Amino acid sequence: MPLEESHEIYYDVRPTSSFWPGPTPDYETLDPKGGVLFSPGIGYMHYYSSGFGMSVAFGYRFHRLHYEGENNYGLDIDYNRLSIKIGILFN
Image (cartoon, rainbow, N blue to C red; front, side):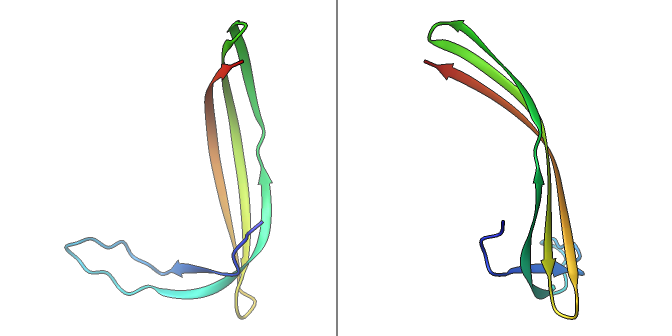
């Protein structure tokens, strides 16, 4: 769930570099309306002794955020991520 009241989303922006000054981006304030987060994963833990072990996990994260603006403007942003987690366990 978004904690901020608004975000500035830039559109119609062209890449800029230090050699070529780009255009000044236009922006519109959008209100975050929440979204969906789905993050399944699988992992394995193995103890080598009574006080030491290791873990490894792999997962996928899908996150969709919805924003609304003026004149019935809506924006959905999808994030697709893979995750790899490696851990050392102390007991």
